[in-house]
Length: 182
Image (tube, rainbow, N blue to C red; front, top):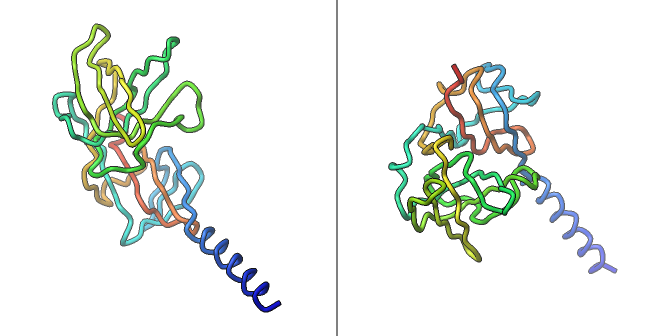
């Protein structure tokens, strides 16, 4: 009987620990800033001392080199061909793989190493690899290209597009912010 109670206690503690480490994401535009607090998509988030702030520095395709770790948001074409909408050079590997983007069937996210970049008939073609697979993605002239570089609090301003990961208490863990649209 004591081992049954102990087992239940261990399970309860495991569930509590899982809930405490749960992370959520928000994508949108910063609507307000007050001290350490930012508002995005109706959520109030706090920027803490350990929050990782990244700035999306615009770059050109020639800045991207083989061996770079990329996060590529793509649109699926009728024949399944992937065409890049946005490419971000990551400072380190984050969530390698290929998956639907934001739950959509027509867009994907590929986080992978760049193996090769060649000129094709439809534009530049990237060959990306990740554990268990690889993808070929066309990069049109219209694709948005960024390098994620260390950011700072001064870039967290109303009107700035942001993608943030935060914990259950609303503290930002990691954010990617770009300059407000003019």
